Image (cartoon, rainbow, N blue to C red; front, side, top):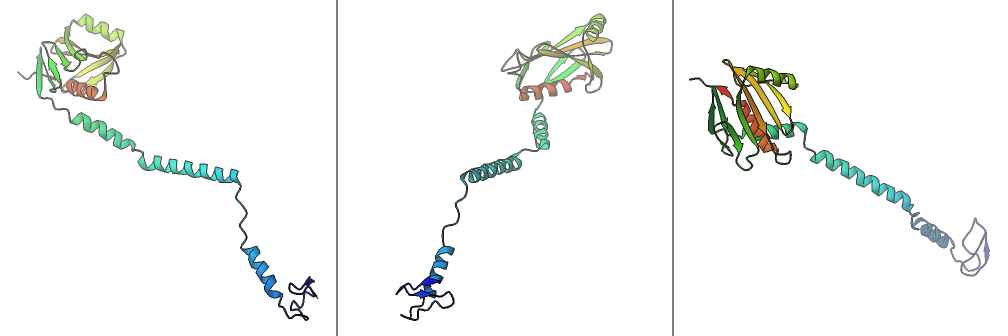
Length: 203
C-alpha cells in the first residue's frame, strides 16, 4: 500500500495509477529504484587499502630487483675481462727467472713495485735450503703452478709469498701490500698477472 504522490489517495500495490487524479505512481517507484542503483558504492576500509598499497610496493621492488640484478656469470666475466686487459710490457731478470710487469709498475734489481704506492711491491730473494724447509714448516702451504714449474704459496700479515726451487737454487717471492684499502681489484689482477708470468730464463 502507498499514497499517491500527487493527491495523497491511498493506493494498492497492484495498481499504482491513481483512480482519483490519474497520476502514474509507477514512475516515482522506478525513479527511486534508479536512485538506489546509482548510490555511491560502499567505501573501502582504509586499513585494507593501505595494506594493498604496501603489497603493491613490495611486488614492484621485487620485480625491479629481478630485472636489474646482475647475473653471477656476468660478474665473473667482468673480473676475467679486467685481468685480460693487463698488458705486461716490461721485464725483470732475477737469477734464472724472467718476470714481466705492466707500465703501472716499476722495478729495481730485486723488486717490482706499484708506481702509485711503492709499499705495494713484489720482492725476489734467493734463500738457502734450510730457510726453504723452515718456511714450509712455519706455514700451511698450498701448491701453485707457474709457467713451467711448481711451487708453494703461503700467507702472512699484510703479505703473501711463494717458494720454489729451480736448478738447485731456492727462491722466495713476497707480495707486500700496505693495507686492504689500497689493495684493490686492479692491483690484485696486475699482481696475479705478474706472478703468473714468472718463467725460467731460456739462455
